[in-house]
Image (tube, rainbow, N blue to C red):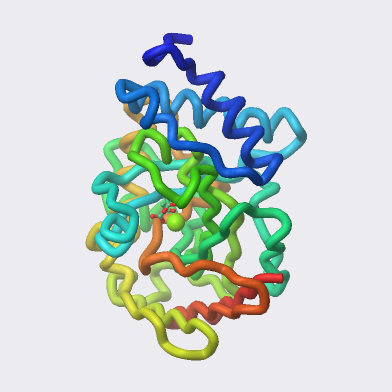
Length: 263
Ligand code: OOG
Ligand code: MG
């Protein structure tokens, strides 16, 4: 593997694996390795995720990140990215977010796509919708392995887009049975009070545009989005910290409510 100012993708991955296992946040790599580049970061991500597959998890799909202005502003990073989702990250609806499993978890609303068919490049909103079996309201449980949730684009790419866990909502629908994903509303309640509201269009104008961006990105790398994969299209709203006993409810128009709480 090529070194990036002295640190290789596999060394970065090893540190991230240890940080996650020990639940101990580390300093962002870009602080000491300013020329750590995006290519090295994606290779580090692949190695970080491969460690989970080697431990017996299955590959489930992808997550998009920083696909809405709500998220880009919240994190101070202005370009989209992707991460990988494995079976150990899929949480059971109704189960609490176990605070002893994460470093400093945060939650945010997302729209997830379950693919019925492979997506061929060049992908578009129309081709993504045509390849989609159903969509779900979803919750992304983020857990940055970096101190203070501070990172650059390359740092967060290596850290698998802060992937922690994911919840799928109780209702799924075929895209054709939903009015318009751009107008799909989401209300976020923290402790019962409305804290944020947004609609699907917050994600690149249309959540399927984010999936299309991913499909085209993967095609450049010689990969494909495949039938049966799940794709989380990126935070619609900004993240909320999870605290012991605190409840956050995500209400999606036509796709039900996901209420999560820290325990
Ligand atoms: C980085 C991951 C971004 C999203 O949906 O924008 C992400 C983070 O915010 O920690 O999951
Ligand atoms: Mg997210």
